[in-house]
Image (cartoon, rainbow, N blue to C red; front, side, top):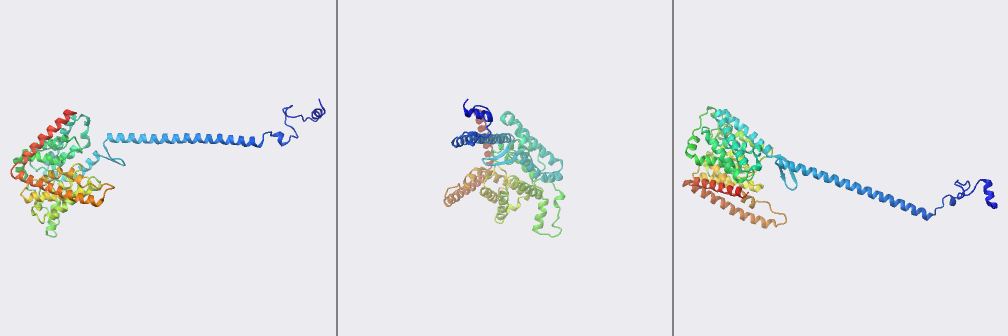
Length: 443
């Protein structure tokens, strides 16, 4: 042992290499032998590890977020699928409406309820039985057809559309018609006005109007016999406003409350107005078509006085519950207004040519035939096209369309005058049956 080692041994301060103890007087360089470069390198390594760890955490969070978004999308798709199954309405690709066909039809039934109650009050059990038999006929007919031919739509009667068709059709019948009118007309309304087109929303013509024409054509003499045999209800002479002031306006108001009519659903125009207001508030119908029809009829009545002879209740029933029918009237606002105006014009032309029996129903049939064409001509201008040029095109097309509607009206007048209109209905029936048979055979 040299002198230095001996001295360290004596003082008890041997080096750290020789003993595993901390030196008492160890300097900073000996205590932490790492250089500044090593420290910096170590700090960089630690920082890199931390950043790497943070990056992994971010990736994990990002993946979790994506998974949550996918899960939410999947839930939405499942909800949409279930809503489609329950027949809720969709306006692709942005608007989703929670309304269902059932809700809409129930609102229509509620809107018709006041008119139904008035008819039962005036006509008693006869009116109630006509309505019930008509509804049973439409519902059973639709049930049988869907069960036998359209097996994919076995639950179609649950949307209440057949019930609404039966009620509206029955409200167009005279008071004392035989009950087989309600059975036959209700069945034809569903078969030839709805199911042969493929079901709800695919029909070209209003089913209730189709049912009315089948009754009118196949039982014409019997129908006309009962049409003009209204009961002489004393209550129909009731005067509320006329007692205060006898004028044409007060007589009109009294007529709105109760008046003589050719059908059980049109005794009280006021109840039909309340029903229409309810449907507008509930956004089940657009007021554009009925208002344009009513206003145009008022204006044309100055030139064609025969319009004023149509019972106000019949005008309101047709204008509110048939003219505003969703599948058989135009989609766009301009088309709706044009449809109402043309309906009034066609009705006035028919009346001026002495077509008096069910003139409004003839007018609806003509206008329903042009609904698809009206939608095509009066659709909004596509974005990016020249507005002035498109407006000119639409105007010219509208002139041609109006000419075609007037021409169809003149043709119908001639068919009516020569007693040939019924053969048009026969031909329509045969064509519809053959077409439906071909499609069913291909399926």
